[in-house]
Image (cartoon, rainbow, N blue to C red; front, top):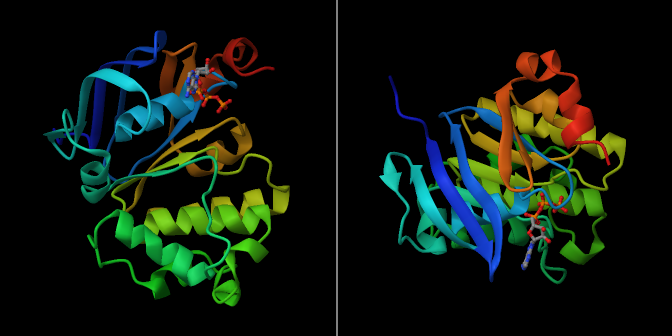
Length: 237
Ligand SMILES: Nc1ncnc2c1ncn2[C@@H]1O[C@H](COP(=O)(O)OP(=O)(O)OP(=O)(O)O)[C@@H](O)[C@H]1O
């Protein structure tokens, strides 16, 4: 049996004295795309940040590519190919789209020259005509595409996306789903925290559902659909 690309078990996380994640277990295989579902405040962002050691204090096992990440800095985790595209996009307004995307390679310290800018334009066709435009002159949806493209250019093996389509118009949500399908053909693995069910259903094959920092369900979409109470109990507002 091959080892998962990401293997998490017994993961707890805290902000100060607040205990947020409770013994989380999760795995992602090479080439898989996984949804992390949960309502506001369920712990999705905390989990993604804990994987990168980029916020909460945490304990437990996180293995990536067969290597334990305990004691490894955020920079070295990125360098190993574990990338997070945070909710707040962080697009620099005074540099171009191309320059914003190129910054991803700096985060990864030059690793993974295998993704070219040409690959990026092919995966994100809406961005190519905007490549010389300033980051400050983009719509929210265009900024989100740039943020994801930057993570890909950093040559992620596993790209973690924190609510990539939150607040975006349906037409941009559809575009993002198509772009993600193209990225998957490049062999990228994905972990996508979202509340937009239709979107993650279109671009993932397995689901982890988190509530109050506890994984309350994991399985494929067929398993998820077999229990219609999950949506009402854990996703309804
Ligand atoms: N920096 C922080 N300091 C203290 N508590 C925090 C911090 N960030 C998040 N929390 C708390 O941790 C819990 C989980 O929040 P988290 O942001 O992980 O949820 P989420 O599922 O990503 O929700 P959302 O969809 O609203 O982003 C919430 O109770 C939240 O108030």
